[in-house]
Length: 371
Image (cartoon, rainbow, N blue to C red; front, side, top):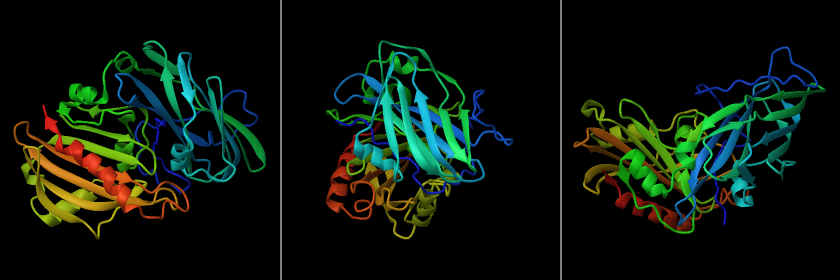
């Protein structure tokens, strides 16, 4: 059973007009050579909290995005990530790994607690990903993660560099005993009947991707002092992928959409131009429906991958509703991918599978309660 299916930017060029928590890289002292301009790569490591299906325990999906900022292509790239004692990495299933659209010549290996990937080339502004499942023993609190080690060739010369070492307090997760549904009730103040089966659900980086930003650090529910909240969850891999975004913000009646054209603009504004996918703005069906006790705008459209022959497209449904009692506006999105990944699959529609996946997500929406 696969426990991972993260979507990430593939081989396409990625515009990073804005980014949060930029983790600048530093060349290591034992480099084979140094560039006068500094490091050639930037690193965005994250751990996304996942829950074991049907059980009150969790693990992490470790994903590190690495971007070429060298000014030109680099070749024969080797990236190595070593995890701390007590944490055990596991390779992804092939269908989950396919979501990253790996180039020809890509390889990965796992030796003890060290995960290594090799790429023949990484072009300017292009990203690649180190991605593994990460289980843990006991209840570790603060964990120190060594910086990613990189070795590559550029302009006929071999280089080494190393990303920053990081320490994260993971005690909130490692000492938590409960399901994803219970976690969301406790930390987001809402209840959703997430299917309790043998399939794993957990948090994802979809919220960051809609903003065109790389995720960093622990990924779960984001909140601030103004009461804003956002998170995204998912289950499955390409071909069975279900995703949900939940956003809560203070209610401002003057900015709340009140007509179809305003709803259309509002929905399209949720996905930034720097995101690695887009919404079909020419084909949006809008109506008003009941979502539990709330009167909601519901907009149906499609999401489309910007990276050719990676994930293709799929259905995307948006719910917009105010909670007058708490004075918050909620924006909820559900989306599915039922095609599989890569050439021959990403461009082949599978409407029956998509309908099945969306029906499961619709069941979660129907059960939604604000606590």
